[in-house]
Structure formats: structure tokens, C-alpha cells
Length: 206
Image (cartoon, rainbow, N blue to C red):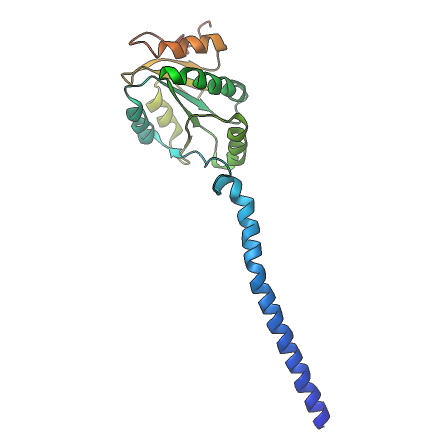
């Protein structure tokens, strides 16, 4: 009987020791899992691992942005990853932004993708490498009011590019894409005190 009791106690001690080792192993493993998870998210949030997601913007925020750039020629390109013409046009905008930056023209992008498309947005920005700031439509905003507030003649056609003079007023805009030569002319027009930036996007000839 004593032998059985001794064996039972010994067996219990072995189980307790094994449980203690198991607990220590699990605790020690936690930092490894956390680091692995952090590594997975690092491309979007880690230091030096890529640009942060575009800041959210609504109509009041857009107007504040325009006020910030007042006194400078400004080009604003509205784009989305689901818009094929936007994807084709955007690298040209990136190239022209570099070309006209020394002349004082500022460029900003506004992404109109939904929250569910953020992985596509991140990959697109990483691939095109824009050297200008990008913003993103704030989820849940009234899009019709946003379109109207940005440009009364914009009904959501993508892409849209707006050209602002130094006084903060719209010189012209493109609804849909245009050849690079037309864009160059429009960029150049923002440098002058007045004038139209190409056609005004009413479906006229290029």
C-alpha cells in the first residue's frame, strides 16, 4: 500500500514538473510569436519598411489642404486602383511631378478606393513610388457632396485631375485621361498668373 502511495506521489510530482516546464515553454514562446506577427505587419507600419498608409481626407480636410498650398501652383490627381485609366495615367503624373517640381509646381494624389482595397493601394503606391503626398477618401463620407464640393462639374468620373493657380482657384480640370503632351501644357499653365489648363474636361476634343 505504501509502495502504491509512493508511486502515486512520485507520478504526481512528475506531472507537476512536466506542467511547469510546459508553462515555461509557452511563456518563452510568446515573444517569438509576437515578433513574427510584427514582422508580417512591418511593411505597413515598421520603421524604414515603407510609407505609411495615405491619411484620410473628407471635404473640410480637402479645403484645408488647398489653403495650405495657396500661393503655389498645384495639381491634384484623383485616382483608384479599380480604375484602369487611373493605373495607366498615374506613372505619367509621377514623372511630370518630378519634372515640374523644380519650377515650383506641387502635386498631391487623392485615392478613392474603399477600405477593403487597401492592400491593392499599398502595392500600387510601392510600385509607382510617387514623390508627392497622397491622401485617401474617408470611409463613410457622402461621395456626392464630396464631388460637388471639390468640383461642381465632377460626378465621380475617374481619373480626375484639377489644376490650381497660385491664387487657389481652379484653372482647369481633366475628367478622364489625356495624352502626356496635353498634361505637360496643363502643368505649365499653372505657373502663369492666369490661363486655362488645357480643356476643361467637358468631353471636348483633346
